[in-house]
Image (tube, rainbow, N blue to C red; front, side, top):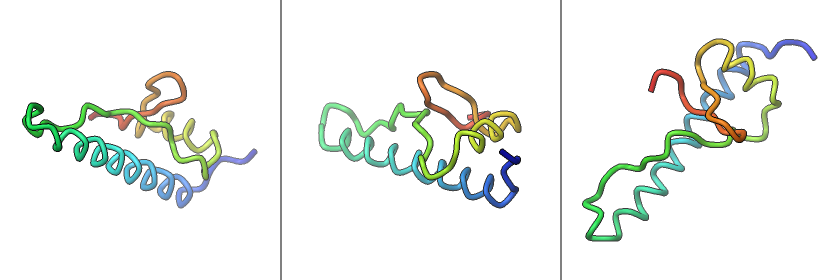
Length: 80
């Protein structure tokens, strides 16, 4: 398979960030209902990447240092 294009990598990273943010917001909203939690932020830092992109795209983003493998098929943003 050929290397993913810059456009595909950019779209994949954008989709990853959006899914991570939505996952964190969903978790935050669950925490917000309990008065004992104090409205703290989500501890979610790693997610499974969107499946509409092939594995080669995620491998390339890791190689470029944009994502880090977090184990068990999960990734997190590098440097965060």
